[in-house]
Amino acid sequence: MRETGTTGDEPVMLAQVQSRGRGRAALTLLGPAFVASVAYIDPGNFATNFAAGAEHGYQLVWVIVMANAMAMVVQYLTSKTGLSTGRSLPELCRQRYGRRINGVLWMQAEVVAMATDLAEFVGAALGLNLVFGVPLLPAGLITAVVAFAILALQQRSYRRFELAIIALLMLVGAGFLYVFIASGGQNYVQLAAGLVPRLDGGNTLSLTVGIIGATVMPHVVYLHSALQTNRIGTADRRERRVLLRYNKWDCIIGLGLAGLVNLAMLCIAAALFHTPGLTGVSDLESIHSHLGVLLGGGAALAFGVALIASGLSSSSVGTYAGQVVMAGFMNWQIPLFLRRGLTMLPALLVLGLSGDTTQALIYSQIVLSFGIPFALLPLLLITRDPRVMTDMVNRRITTAVMAAITVVISGLNLYLVYSTLIDLV
Image (cartoon, rainbow, N blue to C red; front, top):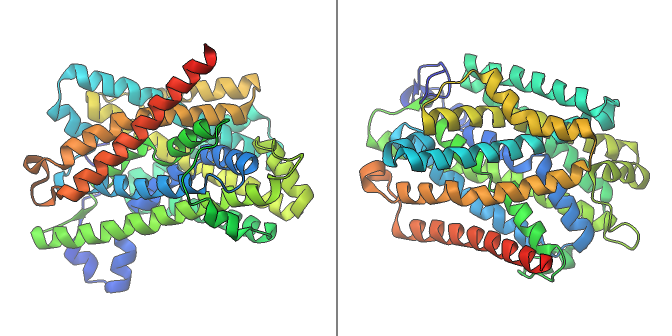
């Protein structure tokens, strides 16, 4: 696999794509953000969103909306970076910063990759266990095999890989649409009230950080920049601006759909489980069984299938992101099977020990949130630099918004550390 490219394909020129007609051209140009959006509805989102809805009702709706809005900005900028420079964000960091800084960035990215794999493998394995009764450890191994198979499509054609991921994304969305409709009884007044930001103590702060960590994913910030390289070629500046416009809509539509799925998760939990005796229903096994009792076997099956599709698709995307990170920061080409084995080890340990898998998912999302600033700060510095971005450099207002996003996420993380230390004392 080439370091800068996302596939072995030669890039198709934009003029060729546009010659197919406006509708077909639009469908062809959309795709990278949909691949990135899979990471925004991975099994970690299931855990944090259902826990938030069950324990606090609609109170944390604002967190999901805010996290998704920030995700759109972040993913648009990282994809613009790949489009403008033809290089991934980790590659640009390697060129811009010294070896020590890149070593730190790489090591924290590896920790993030392990936390990501934990959420993906545990989620897919749980889904296979709930739907088919497969024991957790064998289910985790099955997940690894399927993830490799999906990723193999990318080696043959970026479009085959994108379409496979989009199909799994649609399966997740269809599953939650069914459960949302079946749940009924949504309190839209409380849902609207949940748009007002507030934290009422308890574990609302940790859930807030977890939701953000499960939404603005560090590894997919790196990946999305690589997805744009060597994909669609342009002949001049005008064509680059056209491609950038399609790229913006790709982010709005793809990440917007992921945001709706996340919101549906919280609303389902708030409608069904935020009642006396059920507020503690936050682990995925209990959610599955209670959905079967409250709504019938169809809802439980839809939840289980959505969990499987989420885990399998996000595992494949996580594998790809690992390649981009290692090749970009350190210029190392380690065999994919070895790299995957190292990052999947914590997940297999959790599955083998049969611990509290849902709690492990929530903790993994908090770890992911702590990795976000290490991805966002280089992105901010690079996208505001006209020497790197040329005509696609950020406007001042865009840089200000990106800086605010970085400060908000970093501030939440620091406050969580402070609160945790105070509780320990």
